[in-house]
Image 1 (cartoon, rainbow, N blue to C red):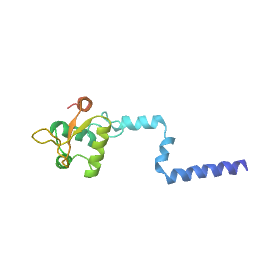
Image 2: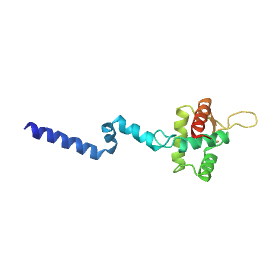
Image 3: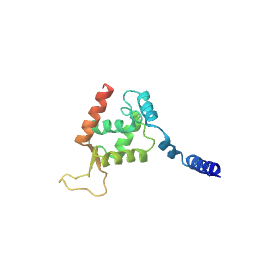
Length: 141
């Protein structure tokens, strides 16, 4: 009966892994993860850091200071940034805002008062500047 209990437990574990593919990561060794990162290229951590959509969006925000979401999306699609949709881009911008790489400012009128109902503009923070400088240096740009 001990063998059948073990087989039952293993079959339960395997069915859990099959149902939830993300769970298989806990069974991957650190050596496998390290090999995957190093074999992907010199400027790569989890995927192409220097050429990923977040790095390219940071460059766009840096170059076109004070752009709104619609302006950023137009520029991102024309430049071939790897964003799948406006929602994907806004999610990336929100994440960059959360980790302190970009900040938003509300629209203001000529007197300097905030205009309600207008789009916010995105600006790079010092953290974002140093991050994109490190990425560009590592990529040899």
